Image (tube, rainbow, N blue to C red; front, side, top):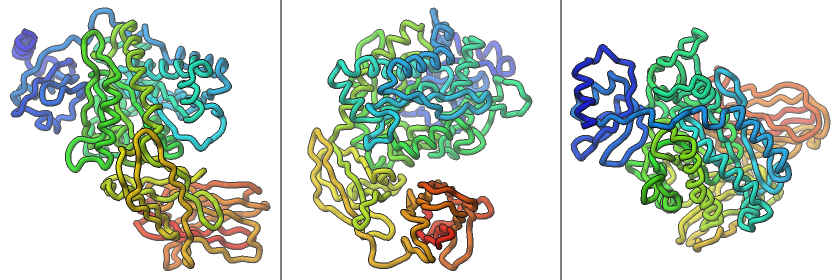
Length: 573
């Protein structure tokens, strides 16, 4: 009947009557009619039951085109009875709650600023809880985030429920206490605060606002049919081939990867913290979506499916029987989870909560509670199986950024998995089995461990001391006083996006940092000013004098002080 009514509506009104009117529809799929046949339309797909149906928000023009291509659709009400967006916590109410938590649980929680939103420059709060939250400890990180899309406050409520549960049960529940003591747990409840504020302030019932408030046409006003960027199409992995390049579309990907301050803030945070596991909460669909669909499979495919399946089985569907499904998601669209996995090494899942965008608030809070056990499973799985350890310079004992490669996993399509710079620590979750582990870094002798066994239920410690090569240009100092600048190192190395040049000064001196190619030609001037004693970090973004990325290959980083010159090899991938 719904299909008949929709067909009658289309035939009676015609395309010209409502080209920008939006509808929520269920698209029927089968072996002859798959979503790939609609890929060029860049639809705002809401949820998918693989091979059966997919819900989508479409304009009248898009609906006519879907029908023209032979797909049958069913009309779905966008405003179910009892829905009122203003019943959910507002931006300010969330900030106030987080401030209350910070005062009440200051022993284990800090509240900080991730960044600011694109247009209204609203603070994006980020929370860390741990037994020593103000310190960078040698512990694995876990992330929970929500509200990439303004119309999905249930995801925000999921992150807040998890946060409150851990805070209130710390010190009383032995499991929760150990989770907080042994991990660095991060929360970003509102990636898109300005889009959400706009939705709440205007109580936009239909259509549901999705994007941020980027002023695409520069007229100083918010135009619903043209402005905004879809933040979950703005990450770099698959950006160019996914989303839409039309600002009028609800899945508009922006002018460039990370063009939006919100996604760029998450990227910068992730490059430093490198979480092992992450859940990004959305609505709707009652699904756990993982990276990635298609062939060849992702290097960690079996592990990712195993963890996703365990999460899904712990989350019941609302108002019916069964639990969430676990399904693959393509990675050609600029999604957060694809960037986090492919570039950072984080296993991130998109959790499509609920069975509608904005359920009545009592149902929404129920959904948040029902998702709790799925989230808490991450604290169990991060304990193993897998391998972890520290990688150090065998001569100096200093931590190293080095590549950790599992030869049985085809990793060519993802960024090399690296240890972090502060402790030289790495984490690799694995399934039980026997693996070949290869640890390597430019200027050091590669170590390979054959037939390394990983057993169920625990992380296996594997600490590695890498021997520097006998000669070469990895680190070399010339000058009159080598005590002026000491401890110079570069990480990550090799670099793709950016690298950190770290060194210690023992006196005040002018510091010049330049990048040279192996012929002695200067390709970049990174830094030139006076610096005081202490440990300093300078970032090079891998670009040359003209602002374009330098070619792949080996370069020399020269750190010049009044005491001499430190030369370090750096590899651009």
